[in-house]
Length: 326
Image (tube, rainbow, N blue to C red):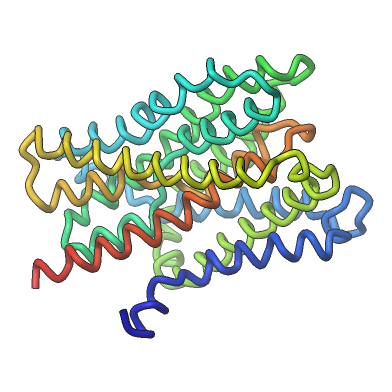
């Protein structure tokens, strides 16, 4: 592979994620509880704006048009919200130590998240897949996730935290996610062109909020020496399990696509959308769903690894698939 090919595989945002973790370790003062910078309030406002713009981007007409390919949509959403959790859930009963339970919870959190929007659509397009179906599934997955992800996580967060008030979670979900999304949907006919015109700027804004939440989460984890309790072999195991989860879901969605005799275009969409997980939703939900006592660095670790992995692997596969259509 030449230098230009290597550069194309290096996602700048993945590099920024790593830099953010390093900054959190060496410069934690901005993210501490007694900091003069109100990062919690800033990130909460940023979350609300992310989902307001998300609502603005959703075209009701495109969502209605996308309903036609029912089998494909069912497969993608089943993979995202049923297959992933079912693959992780059985290991719940094999974890006994508190540290292992937290690692399992981090994987289940990853499994419960919706699919990502932008990268799914871009990579389906690169590979010559069904782009309208990718747009529909990635968009509707985010809406489903607003309800399904907190529901799935509530079974395990409540059980492990006796004094945790779930009503606080749903108030935050309502004010920071659901209401902004619906406000965006209502204003979409009037401001929809705004999101199209400034799409790149809005993407950078999304990423800035994600980095802010990750910075705050890792500052807290470093303060509490969370990672000192995780052995190097466990970190390696987390990486291997994350890779294994991705490969298994990619294989199973491909098998199910062929079993249902999908076209090549629909099979690409099923595999690319059905294996993705949204870092945007993950960082946002981590801030809302988990109590402050949880080690957020560990909770977000599998998701960050998975994010880098899905971009790297799918971009390579999309490039190869794309050459077949030329």
